[in-house]
Length: 302
Image (cartoon, rainbow, N blue to C red; front, top):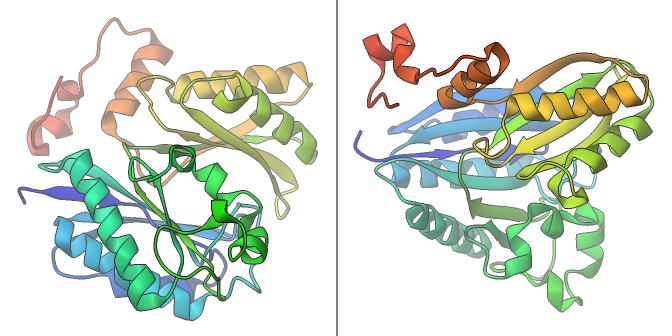
């Protein structure tokens, strides 16, 4: 396949496996490979990773959005993770033979189609944004579905890029284009969610912390612990090891231990070799030193 684009749609359903099954099945088209599927009951959210031919991926995601709109009711949805829609966010990521400009065009084309055919408000974000402030997903999602429902018809700042100035039970969608993002969480040995939120405020870029890091604090009620949930938007700027160390240091200052950490979805091999270099103090490590890359990898690079 000469051209490959990745898409990582996030759906506001993390508890009903049959609903997620139907959404995934709707996106399983020729030319598209479903790479990963993550469900989280506390966040009440699913993250699906697919990749393939750009036109096929674009059509697959539209089908996923339409299915989610039919099966998910935001009026009934409650979870830890911020959300504005049944399909909450749809980012396109260039992988091979595809530019960021190509992904921006895909985001805008899909957004127009969703607004026109599904009657769902669409906000373009990140590299596809039509307003500078909308590059930031948190800005679009402020107040979540409930606030958007109340203000979309009257607040000029809430006017969508495509679709109606009203929200139904499927809510609205943010569609965009961005580089590869690593979703990385650190779980803490405490039930005090204020500690997680405080640490998130300290480590995220917006609070003066780590560059290229977005962070929120959540409660994992079923486990009796809390989580610092991070998006590493440029792992070359701030990688997994730096993010882990920052959270662990702030937790220790508050007398709290780190239980574990987790990666949600997929991660580039380059980010893992970077991690090995930093943790093991290797002078150099290339992905081409990974035996599977030599045997099976396409376009292995330094």
